[in-house]
Length: 175
Image (cartoon, rainbow, N blue to C red; front, side, top):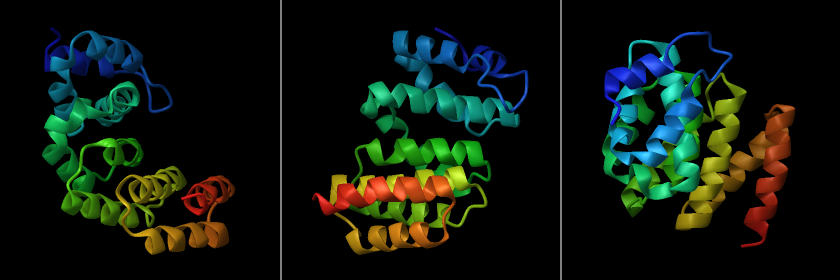
């Protein structure tokens, strides 16, 4: 089993334009899921490269196993509220709707995504939009608020947000 410090070393170095060794860390996590709490802890590391790559690795792990992070849910919700890092936010926006959420936690995540819609990063805003629709589709909450966010993205969003909003609107209409 890799230690938190070993994971930190693997996720360090280089610059913000690369994922570094995060794919190697993903492979380690598939083989040994006991390292997932270490990766969650690294979302709060002092080094931005470690934080963003830990977020990338965690998001990739949850693509195959959405329940993998349920034990860390309280910490993830707290980090989602407190993080200032756009890279951490956009990965959390992709992960949080897939967790097993109570009705109250679903509302908390939805409201966090509404806050993320105000982020300066268009990637964070686009991921938040996706998360809001996913929460509506999975949990049946806040349909009107999700639709309003989509309308705003059509009107004021970047070209990427407008394209995503078109796809998401079709999902909502088909429900």
